Length: 343
Image (cartoon, rainbow, N blue to C red; front, side):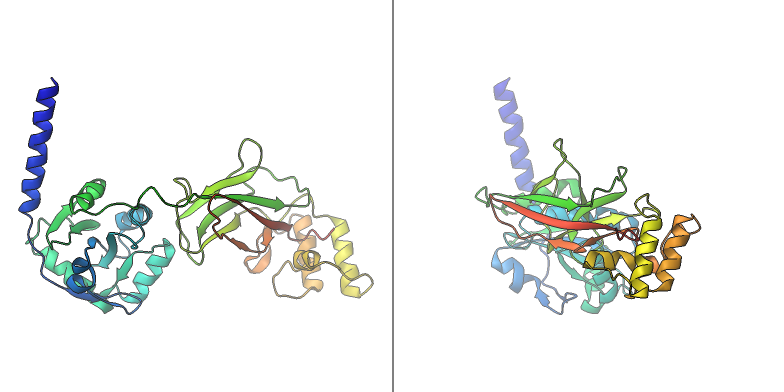
């Protein structure tokens, strides 16, 4: 039985090696990424011993967008373009200019090399559409090009690891530094909040996604390991709070109205910065009768949301930057503010 298994495995390896030897050689090409950096496939990547992984996509392609977080995670897994691989996304459309591609990249927090039509990405896609490297299956589709200049296309996403490894590339070694333990402390002035009222996420700064929710552990703590499988490495990682709660909360009442009124009349000014932030419920950086009227309407149930997009809850600061400290615990703290609650 063992001998039979050995023979099957051996024949499979020979078959894979044969197939790899039959892969076509890709001609040299160049493009300019959205940051204005020119890339020569041979000179800048393959001749440097790097394996190039290309995702062909377009900005408004639904399956491409659905795959974006997974492709970014795969990029991180293979070293985030710092080791043996170079991950790229090239738009296939002539009207996907760099601004559109940049918006797509920021939306999903991508750190791969990206190019739009300004950088001639669509011309490279056209070369693959001819079928000379394999059948064109649309978007997203993936190509893996080894340092020997042989191109494997098309490659299913589930097969990327094997296709990359077949070129001789290796994932970063096991000598990576220990992850950082992040302990998030939220001061909320003893507010009684139902589950889901406010939620905390890890994401890349200035990017809509991907984002990873931070939830309390069994001890009631916001404690997580970064980077980890649950919280993968991100460029410029930050912790933010999100909420869709309605403006009214039991903590906002007539005493808050009276306190804001005294401040406006100069009888008893608000002292702390948190009080002043909470009193400015319309977000115009002023505390006046308009805020007083707004809080009164919220208490009476006439308004369910604060004006000008002001959220029911905010945090100070609005985001927390994560600085890794391998093997150690990093403590982060933010103050949760209920808008309208100045007591």
